[in-house]
Amino acid sequence: MRTVTLTQEPTELYKILKFDGLVTTGGEAKLLIGDGQVTVNGEVETRKRRKIVAGDVIGFAGEEIETEYLPAIQ
Image 1 (spheres, one colour):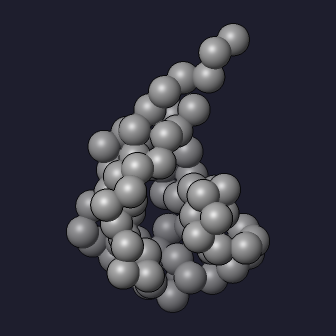
Image 2: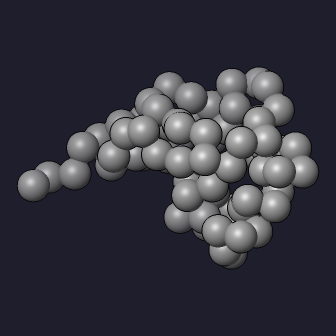
């Protein structure tokens, strides 16, 4: 399982897939989520703008991604 660090919370699901390099564009992320290819905490998630917070586990393409929160230094 890999870990993604969120610098703002909550963060929209499609943005995590895009910025973590799992997909190439936000549009691609939205299509995959809409097709039911992504899970959050073990359940299929089709809401592209699902708010993700620390501790959520995202499943995609056979990989699990745990989220943690570390605020950006001002």
